[in-house]
Amino acid sequence: MSRQQFSKRLSAFVCLMAIALFSIVAIAVNVPPAYARDLTFNKQALVNEDFSNQDLTKASFTKANLRGSDFSHSDLRGVSLFGASLVYANLEGADLRNATLDTARFNRANLTNALLEGAYAFNATFDGATIDGADFTDVLLREDAHAVLCDLATGTNPVTGRNTRDTLYCD
Picture: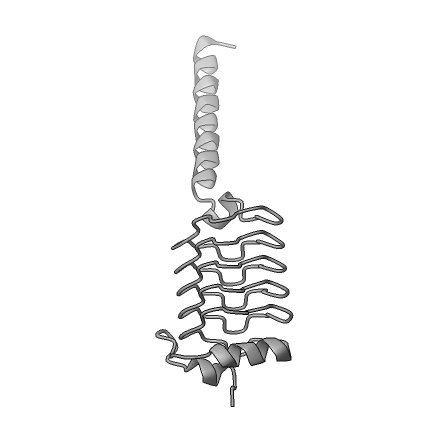
């Protein structure tokens, strides 16, 4: 092989490697953030943690201890809080639409102006919770939890314009 042929082949090889490297970098840079971060917090002790003002869509906090944690104004659409302890948690203005809240404990939690539309909350407890302005449209609740919530229900949700008592179908 002549020196000129070798030089051409080497140039072609270097060019192909540069294209391959550029493609790998381009793919890595364009990975959507939801895939780039771990949103699984199952069974973790996250007492008094600050999750406020975050996009946590479709995260999983199954059976996590979130006592006193701050989720205020966070996007929690589709999140799993199955069996989680949210005692004294701050969920003010949180978007919990279509979330799984089954068997979660929201005792003494702040749900002021929260959006819970379409959430599955069967067996969830809300003793002493603040639900002023919360929207419970189409939320599946147990009868005793419904009674507790109707005793607490006041206000109008600033986003949907719905009265909390109306969304719960309170008498």
